[in-house]
Length: 86
Picture 1 (cartoon, rainbow, N blue to C red):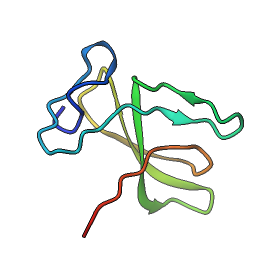
Picture 2: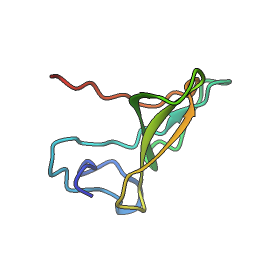
Picture 3: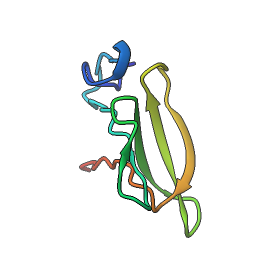
């Protein structure tokens, strides 16, 4: 996958990082206990678009799939964020 980092992903799920995005599998922080889950397996990134007052859109990558998924989820969960300079 061209957005994934060249290392850090579980079971040879690394990418080629062709675009310099260097996506790392940080997992997510669960809102009620503060623990992090799935680090090394999945990466979740918030988008700038809100779904409604409680939910926002995100993008997701995982170690055994070369695509990017998207959906919306509770904003109380700790997903990663990327800053883009304009």
